[in-house]
Image (tube, rainbow, N blue to C red; front, side, top):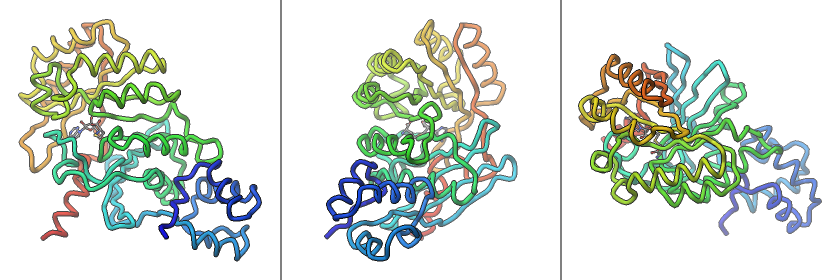
Length: 347
Ligand code: SAH
């Protein structure tokens, strides 16, 4: 019999499970608390349960947990990159960034990715598999346990396309923001997508208060299709329409991510096209100096070019920020730590 992944169950579902086992309902709350507040990694830690119940739980359920394979700590800003091994041997990475406003964890939603963006290291080897809700939670739980500091912000911007793993993403968000669990504020969560239109539209209707980030990276379809295969399926007009719908449904301004590569998307013409797209829109553009990936030919835009890009857009009435680079001294771009590890294995 396949054991049930207990950490992916809601409190309600857990209560039903315990009823089925002939246990009192309040046990569910105790177990949920062990899993999602005390962040237990084994049933044996659950000291307020009887030996008999622990035995029963062990027979029918499994607690997923991550094995730490590597951690790199930046000397510049304290950013930490974690490399984790999943139960089946797949590897994922997560990043902890320390800000004045709190600790933010960037999590992976899949092991690998099948979106194929040409500048991204996560997609080089394709998709291995999607993560379970528990495995997304585990990244945050492990880091909070490891640092003994509360995680207050979560961004789903690591390896993987969250809307290619939609149901698990939703369950993960419900568990993460549940008042009986870690209870992270929905306002402190960002989900980033490469632009899967039906996913954005569905997400808009979930009644959630999270920020949506859209990976734009180019201001017209022709250019976008060259660097992001998903753009062949969903043209910009449809993507932007879905983003407007997201704003209308949630009242939350969408963030547009724009990773800048020299000679690719950083010309005065790009500024004009962006301004045309976004004039008068309630949005926010986040400029990111592209992180060079060894297997790809992209070169970061010059600091001055990025500054100028920002100023020009601002003068045209658009809300722009430049993303501060974190952990420059440790395996930069997403997916690089994992990639390097897998290369070593295959050698
Ligand atoms: N699949 C989702 C989330 C993961 S990628 C998405 O596409 O949004 C998180 C962000 O990092 C995306 O905006 C992605 O385009 C960007 N990104 C990936 N590789 C990068 C690189 N080498 N340099 C800069 N940004 C990169």
